[in-house]
Amino acid sequence: MLRTQVRKTAQLSFKRLQASYSAPKLLLKDINPHVIEAKYAVRGKIPTRAEELKSKIQGDLNPANFDQIIFSNIGNPQQLGQKPITFYRKVLAILQDPAILSILKNKDCPEYIKKEYPPDAIERAERMLKDIGSSVGAYSSSQGIKGFRDTVADFITKRDGFKADPNDIFLTGGASAAVNYVLQILCNGPKTGVLIPIPQYPLYTATLALNNSNAVPYYLKESEGWSLDCDELNETIKDKLAEDIDVNCIVVINPGNPTGSILSKEKMIEIVKVAKEHGLVIVSDEVYQENIYHGEFISMRKIVKELQAEHPAEYDNIQLVSLHSTSKGVSGECGQRGGYMEILGFTEELRAVFVKLCSISLCSVVTGQALVDLMCKPPSAGEASYGLDHSERTEIFNALKERSTKLWETFNQLEGIECQKPQGAMYLFPRLFLSDNVISIAKAKGLQPDEFYCLELLENTGICTVPGSGFGQFPGTWHLRTTFLPSGTEWITRWENFHKEFMDKYK
Ligand SMILES: Cc1ncc(COP(=O)(O)O)c(C=O)c1O
Image 1 (tube, rainbow, N blue to C red):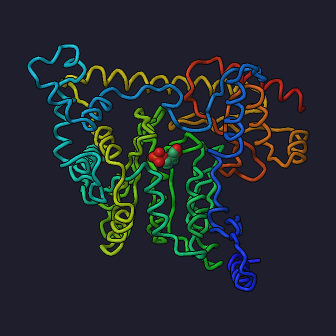
Image 2 (cartoon, rainbow, N blue to C red):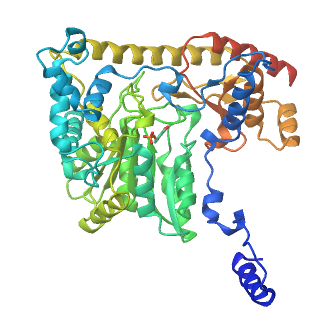
Image 3 (cartoon, protein in one colour):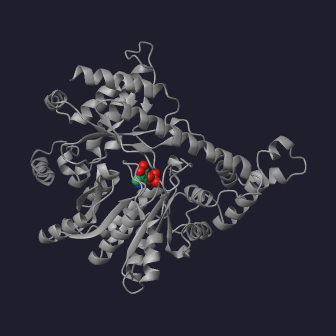
C-alpha cells in the first residue's frame, strides 16, 4: 500500500479509536527510485566486504592468512601512504591560521620555526589571504575566489597556448561536483541521452540514473588500446534519435579511467567533429592530465581552439566543459575536495544556469579552492621551495610509473590475463579469460564471473579490486580494475600466486 494511503487510513482509525499511534518508518518503496537505481561499484560489494575483513584481521584471532587489506579499488593516493606535497600544506597551514604570519615576523621567532615556512610559501599565503579577503571559514563567491580563478586561467593559457578567461572557470568540490552540475543541467528527463565510454568511471552512469536520463554507451576498443570508433558514435546517435532519445552530450575521459589509455589527437579531432554535427556538449574529464607515463596529453580545449582558429565559422557551435581535480596527478588531495570546470561556447542564458546551480550550493570548500590555485601554480625554479617541491613531485610520479609497469608486466606473464600497456591515469584494467567452470560457479552464487574472481582474490590475499562489470565492458568479456598506488611489490607477488592457484583450481 502507498504510504499516503497507510497514513490516511491510520488517521481515520486514529480518530475513531482515539488511541496513540506511531506512523511507519520510510521504506525503500517510499523514496526516490532513481537513488535506488544508481550504482557505484568503486565503493560497492567487494570494498564493503574488504571493510568487514579489515576489522576481523585487526583482532587477536586473525582468521586470514594476510594481515593487511590492500585497497587498490580506488584512486585514493594518500590512503595508501602517498605523502602530501609539502608546499601545499605549508601554505594551507597559514591560510587556516594566519596568526602563524605574526609569529614568523616576530624578531624573536626561533630559526627552526622560520625554516618550516620558506619565503615563497609565506608570500603565496599572503597573496591568497588577500584573495580570500576574510577567512577560509567564510563562504566565497559561488563560482570560486576570483584570484584563484586567475591562477587557473594562467595555467590553462600556458598549457594550451590559447588565452583562458577566469570568468569561464568554476571552482568545484572535486571534479565530482562539476559532473553533477553539468549532468543536472543537461538531463531533461527520460528522453535525454548522454554518450558514455564503456568501460567508464561509474560516477557518470550513477549521476545519469539520479537524473532520470539515459547513459548511451560507446564501446572503447580494447585491442586498439581502448580507442574509439567515431563511425559507431554517429550510428549510435542516429539509432537513438530513431528511438526518440535526444543525445545531447558526449563524455570523454582522457586519460581514461579505468582503461589507463590516452586519446590520440586524430581521435579527439574526430570527436569534436561528431559533436559539431550533432550539437553535442563535450564533457572532457581530464583529472588524470598529470599522470602521463607514455605518450602525450592534449586537452580537448586545445583541439577545439585549434579547430576554431582554422575554421572559425564551422566550429563556433562547440560547447565544451573541461574538468580537473586536485585529487589525482601527484597532488592526491582527494579528501580536500578541490577541482575546477571550465565552460566554453555556451550561450549567456546557459552560463547563467551554471552560475545559479553553483550558487544553490553556496560555494565549494575554500581550502579546496586554495589547493586548485597551488596545483595550478607550483613553486617555480629559483624560488625557495622549488628544490623540495620538484623532488617530491618527481619521486611520486616515478614511483607511479614504475609500479604501473611492474604490475602490467606481471599480468602479461600470467596465463588467463591480458592487459593493455598503461599510458596514463592510476589504473590497470586487465582482461580475465575465465573458464566455463568459473562462469557456472559464479552464476550459481549469483555473481558475475569477474566479481567472483575479485571476491576470491580479496578473501585469499586481502587485495581489494573492482570487477569490470562495475564499469561496463563489452558483453562476454571480463575484467577487473586495480590501482597501482600501493607501495612495494610483495602484494603483486601475492596476487601472482593467487592467480596461478585460482586458474588451476577452476580449470
Ligand atoms: C575519471 C574521474 N573523474 C572524476 C573523478 C572524481 O574525482 P574528484 O571528485 O575527487 O575530483 C574521478 C575519481 O576517481 C575519476 O576517476
